Image (cartoon, rainbow over all chains, first blue to last red; front, side, top):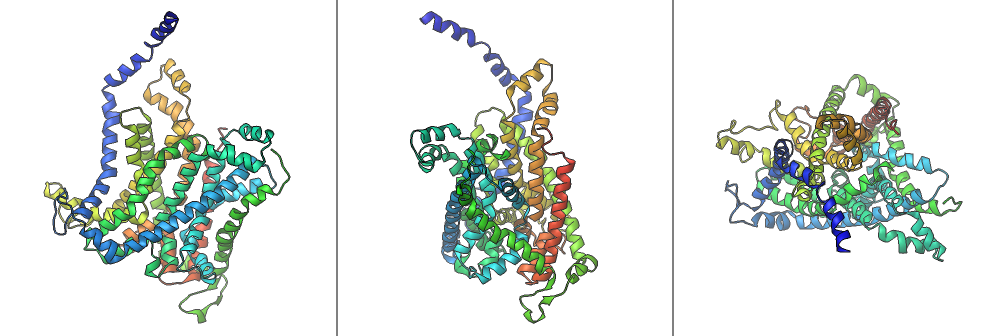
Length: 293
Length: 291
């Protein structure tokens, strides 16, 4: 027994070893891999670091290492300028949009992936066409609609606007994810006497967890970052979102860079953290063919 | 599963309603507004004026043509540079090395940052009194007190670099996803045929990425054309309207002067140009012909 087990093992080990050793010896790797990567990392990270330095450095200092750190700028923006309220508004809009987009995208994505119905191609084409609609150029008619519907200065209104603009792409992505779950699983459950709905919840939905995380997170990030709708549809300061608050800080505090940086940190931390966690789902999902619909 | 039930229609109903109310109807109403004089601040002048807005736009409005030229320049430069850098970045993080997961998370992270926040970060970096150029000057590199955003000679490259910081990850993510679908056999076969690294890139990688490149450049071109957040907050279109794109011009008409009629005419011009460009681009690149 031991012989038969060890023999193929020793026979199999040598082939993978040489390329591995070769890779590490290859000096050109430093020039075509490590050097450009380090340069690009510097380009990405220096701006982030610059913001952190300004946010934690006492006013008047110029050292590049902010030590001892101060929280005075955070106190200024959070309590003084009202970023506490903006943060709360952005959170409500982000989470609201995330829930609505994910649920509707799941419903529509399931319909596209699992049914054949009249008008399916037209629907898909319409979804793709929405990607060419410029949000900035829709400001005028949307403003008129929102005004007549009484949705100005309302967080619900912003959730609706963000949802409308994000749903088409989220739905296309979700239909790709649903298609990747083998339909046989669902059919087997239905043969066993489950209703279609029960089969979906018991069999397909658990498989879609990464898809829900990815689609939901990107809806959250999109809504959290939206600027023009929030700027146009919310004129009262208690309905401002973080990007709007930040845009005013850009003008008003042209000299108070500490406050601007602290506001930036408040706006950046949630999305960058969420993104760091979910970016690999995105790459996996896209390469699994979701993008090809 | 072929079915003749109402189920799929019920499932897509919420999406259809949202699209109809917030996408289709607004497009129709832009068309209608573009034929009217409609200013919120001067409602007594509102009314139907036919093609007067378009006549004014095409024959009298210098800023329309200027913004259009700048939009084209902006899209070509941004999309071109983002594609090249994004492809290089995707190839790098597709290799195997220690710390790859962390490197990916870090280089992709600006993708999650909003246009306004990008502006905030780069204003800190560019500011003439405590910014990076001041710091470099202290170390003996360059001149102190350069205001890259205020100087007409440097405002364009400075804006381009800022948008690159946030835009390159988009291409890197999409192209990395597609790189991972290339079967390893193709590379092995190429190796057997004696192909070097460069040869493999030209004959295997690029042809495989073709459709992904066509689709991502088109989506990005449309997106960069429509992108307003960053330029609006970084330069405001200045100095002297030098960096005003067409959508920024529309946004300023809508937000600042509330001139909805003329703004809608500008919007229609943007639609037509984008639609024409997209069809032409897909035709010329023979998208999907590989399959």
